[in-house]
Image 1 (cartoon, rainbow, N blue to C red):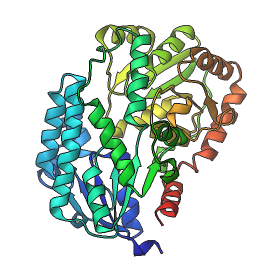
Image 2 (image 1 turned 60 degrees about the vertical axis):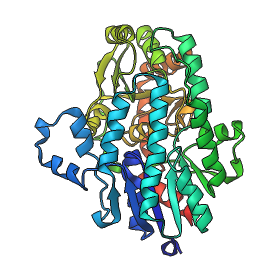
Image 3 (image 1 turned 45 degrees about the vertical axis):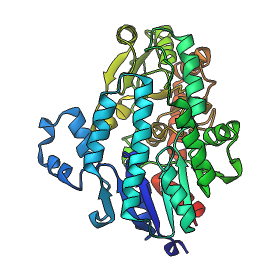
Image 4 (image 1 turned 90 degrees about the vertical axis):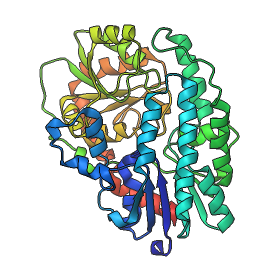
Length: 404
């Protein structure tokens, strides 16, 4: 039975909005939850007393880090380490420095957790932030579970190098990363120590295989999102098609292809991008000339952008399984995306799967939806149907079947 297992979860950051420890606690499977920083433990909890209208964007993101429905007695944070991690990242002005910081954070976090002692029947970790824990668990005979949240770094790095060659001037040239190989090696060592490697999509699993990883221990478990992202039924309107993209504005998310589609469909469609801007000033200026560039917004404001849109576009080059695609489907938005985004979208049913870097395909699908309003409505209904598969409840069922 599920209740016979007790898993210790070690998670850097707020990945998945703490879905894993919340699900495990609900099933009485959570031994303890360790994280760097959140707004319910230590001095950060007092920051929540500041009125929302007085909070900066960064403070709003911090106060939004709330592991809901998990007793605080089951949570241990390392707030000092968490703030130092943020500060180091802010001071990292090169790819080498960023990778060095990631390595430092993963190793330091693991040591902090190990000082607390491993207990329970197993541990649940995330890629590049769990090696020492997985090694210790194996020595103690505990089950080691790791989640590969994105394609392996070797694959991601190669794809981004190609993007930079295709789109010079969009970002700082990728300088030699002295810690890249160590980062890749750490990830691959984690695979060797884990009993189960959870992958959000087939793209992630297949990418592990391309790197020589243990595909037989990989299990594809698509993610899920809270149904709160549902919005009121879409109303027809006479204005141009509204196309929404949510995510970091940069090469990995396929931003150049969103821009080109916006240029070609000017007057026929309106494009809006929401998310942190990680491109050069020149590229930012060109984007602003052709589409609405909102920038990063607090999590609490995301919902209104889904409500605005008719279609969701995410032509990512490399992902794990982008949760924004699940959210879009839950809001009844047809999704145009790539295989590398790792979505649950069904091609020609509730959206379209187009090859990476294929602007022609993106434009063709959008023109189809523009010219056939009835098709847009059909896909709207299908998106709502498939969204049940992408619900948090369905994800919980899939996850527990594997963990058991």
